[in-house]
Image (cartoon, rainbow, N blue to C red; front, side, top):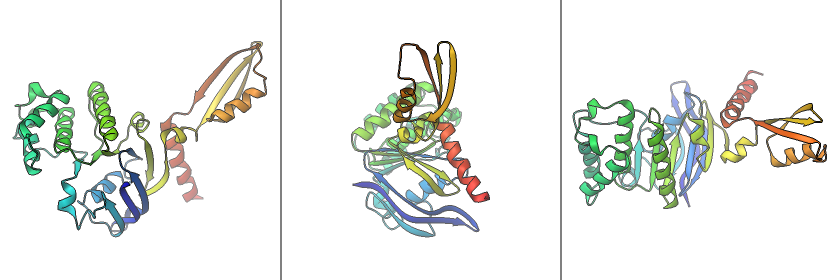
Length: 286
């Protein structure tokens, strides 16, 4: 079953097309990444899916529900962490989490709040006003608020931006555990190392989908610079970043003992995603 189904979704702001005839399916229990440059439509798409923006056209189902017609029923089953934390600065971290938990009628709320504060390593600051927190710490509280009611699907807009590496690692451990239990994680990110942790990635530009694939398959769209030293003479070639291409290239040399070294310098996922975006830009200009 798909957690999200989108067909021909469009959203306009005047003459600006924020989303342009977009179609997408997200299976349940997956970590689904949304990547692309600023202004590509990532945040707009998430806001449409959670029901806070009205699309101009298209078909949308989230957990089998319409985000607008069924918004109150849907909101009990989804968590949403916006890019800028939506918190009450004059409340403590604990009371912010309790506030969102009460709105969702979470049972054993105090115990649940204590557990999630511990996970986010906020126990020592639980009773401090959120207004005194750094941007990274506000992100922690915002994530706790999105998770407090055990949602079936979680929308995360840049969840680990400005977060320290340790909590970022802990967050991804939790994301994977949630996915293994059947929870769907829909995450937008600018951080390419996070894209590699997703089950599938969608690349957006100007509200259009450029590619949908696994991170591993996207990596194979890149190139590998292969340098082989034969009797101390270096021979350099550029091949596709696939196991077959590497095997075919090495067959030229017979894999003999006089091949003293083999070095691989492959494109990283950031390079490849940027090249996909740039190729689209060249097509539009030509």
